Image: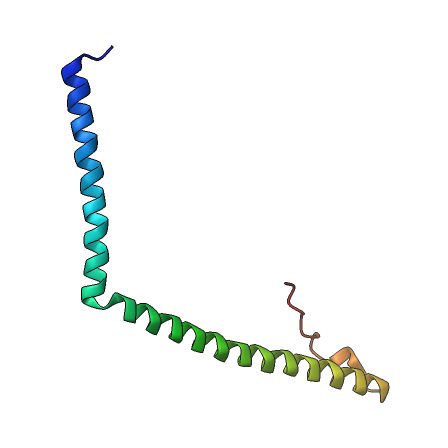
Amino acid sequence: MTDEPTKDALGTAMTWLGGGGALAAIGVLIKGFVTGTAGQEKEIRDALAEENARLRVRARYAMEWQDLCLRARREAEKLGFDPAGWPDDPEEDEP
């Protein structure tokens, strides 16, 4: 069992640590407002949205190209071309 002075010391330490943690959190929040981190976060979100849109366009082009290749192969086979000398079909990506 712990004695009273040890309990008091632990209680005081926990109070100081809790208060110090809260003050540190408030300090970080105030520092963010002073240094303009809120504006930087918006810039980062905007940049990520722009990059996402660019990648979607590229993915759409890649899928259209793959579809055109497969259609061309089917049409060539219908016309009687020998597919033995062709490279392998493009692989479909699985989700």
